[in-house]
Image (tube, rainbow over all chains, first blue to last red; front, top):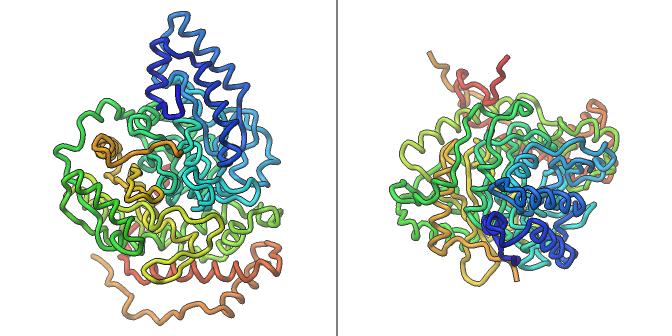
Length: 461
Length: 75
C-alpha cells in the first residue's frame, strides 16, 4: 500500500487477502514517524493499541469471519474525541490534567466496529475556538502543501494528516467551519453532516447549539464509507435527532443527474479572493449549473452564530476561566472572557433569528436540491498571519476565515467540502450544500465533481 | 394576530467605544469572578466590541413575537 491508498482500497485489499491489517498499520506508523515531525498533525500515536487491533482483525479473517467495510483502515481523530486511556485534551493545556478517558468516543467505537484501526489523536486549535490550526501549547499544525502555511482549523491536524498521506481517514469537529476550513486549506474532502445526525457522545464540547462531528478523507467514497459506519441512534447523545440509518455509499453511483443545482449569489459571491469564486464557477460548469440563488440574510446569520458561539463557549468554560485563565491559549482566552459579558437577551434574540433564518433557508430547498458556495475567502494564510486583505480592505484574519462556512452550519445543513484546484496555487474548496438529512445528495454531487476530475485531493508532495 | 415590528420606534443604540466597552469589562469581571490580568484587557475589550457589532446586526432585524428560539426542549 502507498501513501495514496484510499480507505476503500485498503479495506478491499484486506478483505481479498492481498494485504494484512498488520501491514497496513505498520505502513501508516512508518509514514507518521517519517513525516509527522514536519507537519505536526499528531499529538498522540497509539501504536501498541493499533498493532493489537490489527492482529485481531487478521486473526478474524484467517478464521473465516468477514472483515468489516473498513477492515484494516488506519484512522486518527482530533484530540477532542475520547480515546481510552488518554486525557481528552481538546487542544488545551488545562485538560491534560483530566482523568484518562474510560472508553472511546462513540464514533471511534463505530469506526473500529467496522474494522478501522485508530492510530492516534490529532492536533487542533484550543477548545475548537479557532479557524487557523495554530496552538500555543502543541505548536501549529503545518499545511502539507506549504509548511509555512496554516492548515486551517480548528481540525488542523485532521486536515494535515489526511493531506500528507499519513492516514486516509480522520475525524474532526465543525461548529462554525472547523472541518470545512481545513479541508479547503489542506485540499481534502470533508463532510459536515446534518446537525444532530451523528452522535457527539464521548467528545469534548464547544458550542452545544452548533457542534457537529464528521470525517475528512481523500475521496468521496471514503467519506461515504466512514459516514455510513458512524450513523445510528445513540442514547448517550441527547442532542442527536431521531433519524433512521440512511446509507449513502450505494447511492453515489446515481451521480448528479436530475438534481437541481444552483450557485449561491449575493453574500457568497463577494468578500473573498477571486479564485475562491472561480473554484465555485469551475464546479458549477462541470455540473451544468447555471442558476443562482440568494441565501437571505446570510451576514446576519453569521453575526448570530458569532454571538451564540461566544456566549455558549464562555458558559462552558466559566469555571476554568475563573480558576486557570493563565493556562489558556491567549488567542482563545480573551474571546472567552469577552463572551462572559454578553447580555442573555442578545443570545435569546439570536436563537430566535435562527428560527426565522431556518424557515427561509428550508424554503430555498423547495426550488433546488444542492447549493454551491465558496468554502473560505482565501487560500491558506501564513502561520501567524493576523490580518488579510479582502476587496482592498485589511481585516482580522481569524474571524473572517469562516465567513462563508458560518451561515451554513448555523442552521445545520449537510455540506461536503470538495477540494477544487484553480491555477497552480494552494488548494481551495467548494461547499456542496444540501437540505437537512440529504447528505446523500451532497455526496452524489461531490462524487460527480471527483469523477469529472474537478474535485481531487492528491497527497501533498 | 401578529405584532407590528417595533424597530422604527426603537431609540438609537450607539456603537460601543473603547471607554464604554472597558467600563463593561471592568464591571463584569468581579460579577462573573474572573481574575483578568491587566495585559489581557485590551484584547478582551476588542472582542467585546466585535461581539456588540455582530449583535447589532441581529438586534436590528425585526422579528415577530411568535418566532420561537431554535433550541427545543422536550421533557
